[in-house]
Image (cartoon, rainbow, N blue to C red):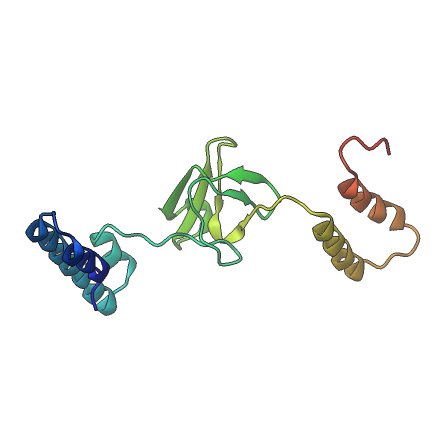
Length: 162
């Protein structure tokens, strides 16, 4: 089985096409695919991938791939759109190499592994967050008004008078 089996079947069914040209293209596709596959099995290091024009995509804190244009949320809760991605060292983060996400809108960067994809808040999400916070916050009467006010503000609908 080859990557071009479907194309080859199509070529066989055609009456009026340049079968020789299309078969030669299919042969080149198969050869290139085999080369990459064979080299991939031997060595999938970042350096080897770069030699072939490939790069691993960065992942967020949840293990989801990050792409240019994704809306992300930093560990501090800042929401930004990824405008470029850079892999390398940064003086303020020690000697290791990190994926850094850059945003033109906010003119800042954040480390990819500290970010999560941003999802618009939902009532269910706010309630889950509230319950999780409630379990970790002993309410003794002195702080319960502030606690509930924080989550009530998140649950208010746009245009509500209260």
